[in-house]
Image (cartoon, rainbow, N blue to C red; front, top):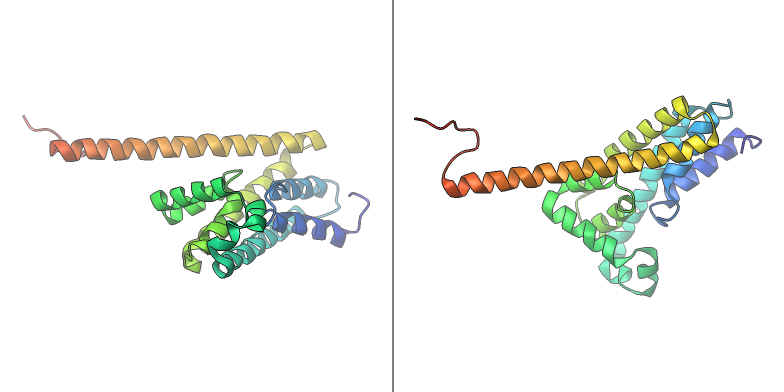
Length: 206
C-alpha cells in the first residue's frame, strides 16, 4: 500500500472501517491500525486516518441501524439475515441493553465480537436515534482515536500492529469484566443493605 496514491489508501481504509458493521469478520481495527502505521512513512496523515476511519465506521453503523429499523427482526431471523448476523450475538446484545440501557450500547462498541451487532440491534429494537447513535459515535471516536494514536507512535514494524490490536482488545475485555464485576458487587451490596434496613453509606451508631 506504500506505493498507492494517497486518495486510494484513504478509500481502502474507509471501506474497511465501514464494512465491519455489515460483515463483522472484517474488523475496522485492521484498517485504522494499518493506516496509522502507514502514516509513519509519510503516505497518509494519522489525523486524516482517524477522521476517515471514524466517519466511515459511524456511517456504516447508521446505515445498518436504519436497515434494522426498516427490515426488522423478521429479516434477520430469515436465511439471508442469519448469515449476515448470527442470532446468539443479537440475543446477547439484547440482554446487555435490557440490563444497562444506553450505557450498554456505549460499552459494547468497545468489545470485539459484539460491537458490530450494536447498530443492527438498535435498529431492530426501534431505539431512538439519540439513544442509539450518540453512544456509538462517541465510543467510536474514543476507540479509533486511541488506536490510531498508539499505533502511529509505537508501531515500528508491521508485526507491532497486530500485537497492539490484540493488546487493545484484551485490555477492553479485562476492563469490561472488571466493570461488570463492580456493578454486580454494588447491586449485591445494595440489596443486602436493603433487606437489613441499613443504608450502605450510613454509619452504625452505638
